[in-house]
Image (cartoon, rainbow, N blue to C red):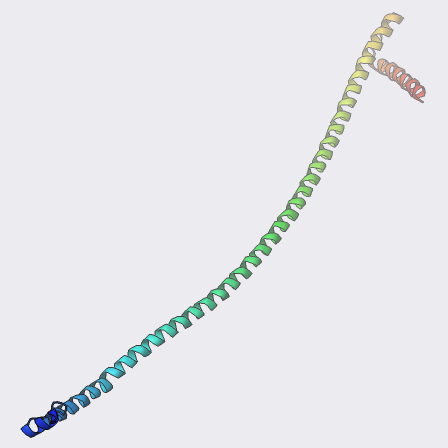
Length: 183
């Protein structure tokens, strides 16, 4: 049997499994051009893009971690400031209570002093009114006593000096008898 390869070789025809030399040279040249283009131009660009993406992802993660750390620090500072503000507020409330108590005590003392002053003024006024009433009563009693004595005696006691002595003596006797009765 004759094989097909022998038949083709005998006929002078080229083997379809083996390419012609020019096709082989062109194919190898094209392969090297493609490898050169891909290796020198495309691969660095792809690596650069991948590196940028990696940096962006890792940088984003780092920035997120830094932002989270900064947020924790800020939160801690805020909590400390809030606690300090609460302490200050409590201290101010206590100071306000103390001041209110002090003002209340001062007002109470002022009110008591004013009340004492008013009571003393009232006592002074009462004493002055009593003295004035007593003097007026003494004069009125003296006048009435003189008039009554004049009617009883039947003579006029119009002499003021005499009248004054009689009235004073009568009132002194009356006061002394009242003083003995009180004892």
